[in-house]
Length: 481
Image (cartoon, one colour):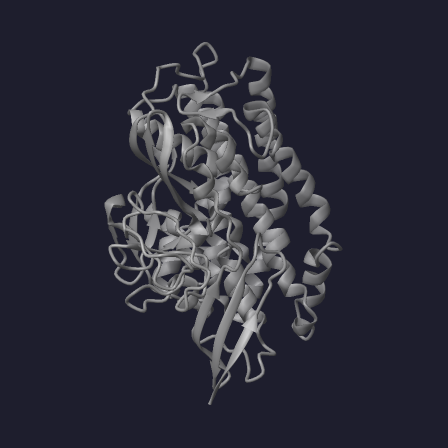
């Protein structure tokens, strides 16, 4: 016999989340992931002047505000086919990277690691040290991480005036030029970030960490280290987190941090089972509403509408079901690093596939890569050149803008007419990862990752469910519009 276990609401999750798990033999037999809060931003935007979107979409979320701004900017830029000033692109990348690194640090220190300080792990040999280090509110790590994160976000003040919800990001670039003194401040902030990562999070130079190219090299490197990364790796070994939350879906990245020449992280799709990469084709993206509380609409997000139907009997979430060429896909730092060919991540995937462990490791490797690149970007700024291109815009037509938020691929689909918004659709990273079933009955990535998880007949061991959910770092407020 099976029984239904409902878990929710979740703490330390941005927004509302509920899981409905069918338990058989002490393990999850099937899962339904529900986003129970409707937001409605897509409807709020309809009929408004085109540039109103730049004021509204950042307010979708207070922790990935720059990502939403830059996706809207990219969509508006695509409508008119204009290019931003190179300095503006670099400055936006710096702000975006600062936000995403802040999100990665927040996820690791505030959302993910505190779960291992639970009393249910008291018998583990590492528990006392981990509780002292990561226990919510009380852990010693907070006194080091929070000032480092606050210092990092000062980049927003220099580039965008404020954070979140800045209006500095425009189709032509950024509205605020950086002078020589401010570049020195940027480099100082990035150096401080690097110091925290090397002394506390990683326990080694960024170059040495990024030189690790295999699981064997990672195992040898971490011996004798007392960094927070090494502490996580020890826990991952003990709890076999590389076998928890496994799925074998395509890993999708739209390409991250598009510079004047090329993107820092490549766009593409990586198959963890065959280790075969392929090109990313946005035309293959559809959104299914079969099990969402939405009325039927076009499968193409460029032509779709958002029409709530709270009484829909088949629905169980306000989240739609994005699909790539008819398949669910996982997005996030793991997907970005796999698609980009990062050797350590590729090797970990070949050994165990996507899992709780590989998702967390990918975020930390990405953080190291971004810290190094941010220093390079700050030096690339040509302070004699403009940061904003003032080319006139027609504001009529259709466009799509993709960026890589901390949690994965974010797409904005827009149609303008006479300077006003006629259609607006948003597919957020958590929409991909936490999607419900589609018309073919295919479960979303998290729903698949939860199947097989041992929770006990009474659900008493459901802490494993928490680890899987948090490994995707959900942002539910971005998910359901």
